[in-house]
Each structure stands twice: as structure tokens, then as C-alpha cells.
Image 1 (cartoon, rainbow, N blue to C red):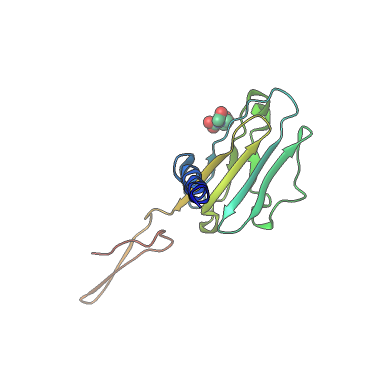
Image 2 (cartoon, rainbow, N blue to C red):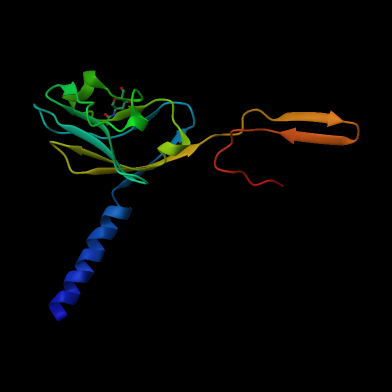
Length: 154
Ligand SMILES: *[C@@H]1O[C@H](CO)[C@@H](O)[C@H](O)[C@H]1NC(C)=O
């Protein structure tokens, strides 16, 4: 009984260390491009496997045999993900995401042949850019659109 209890405590502790310590937070700007950092220490036969864990499982980008392997790639990421191919041999396994969408928010994992797992939490921001002010008699309307997350109004 005592050993079962300590086993459960251990499980909880190891889960917490994954969920808090090793997660890198990255904030991306809506519609821009964004780099998810990861490095690799293998010298040859590099394997890079980027996947998304939440909100939905999916393969984001795979690389092995010295080339991109796009067969398993999730539809949502098609044509928007690339590696810095010229830097892979120097240990750069970072992922370049273009045309960031709000739906890209979530937790990503980078798994390489020569490294520990790297977890990235991606957040999307769409800053206030264009506020229109319109006067109609004694009524003034301010409007804007495409702001994310939803702003507080005062
Ligand atoms: C990988 O290369 C890109 C492009 O040069 C750079 O922005 C990024 O910081 C590099 N990342 C790492 C982990 O070396």
C-alpha cells in the first residue's frame, strides 16, 4: 500500500516537471511569421519531429534522410511550416511558421535524434492596429477589428 502511494506521488511530480519547467513560451503575432526554437546535438542522420499536443494531436513537420517528410503532415499546417535547412547540420532544429492563425495556439513538441524533448507553448496576439472614428451628428463611433485576445474596453 505504501509503495503504491509513493509511486503515485512520483508520477504526479514527474508530470509537473514536464508541464512547468521545460515549456518555453512563444508569442506570435497574427498573420506574421514566428520561430519555434529547438536545437539538436546529433552530428549526422538528423531526425526532427515537430508535433502538436494540444488542443489536437497532429504532425506539424518531420525531417529525416536529409529531407522534409511531409506525408504525415496535418492539413492545417500545409505549406506554412519550414525548417532552417541550411542550419540543421549546425544543430538548429527550429521551426518557422508563416501566416500565424489564432487556431495555431497550443502546445508543440520538438523531438530530435540528438536531444531531449522540447515543449513550446504558442500564444497568438493580434494587436490593435487600425481604429476608425466616425461622427454622425452628436454620436461618435470608434471601431476596430481583428484584435485578439478580446480587449477590455473602458
Ligand atoms: C536557427 O536559425 C534561425 C534563422 O537563422 C534563427 O532565427 C534561430 O534563432 C536559430 N535557432 C537556434 C536554436 O539556433
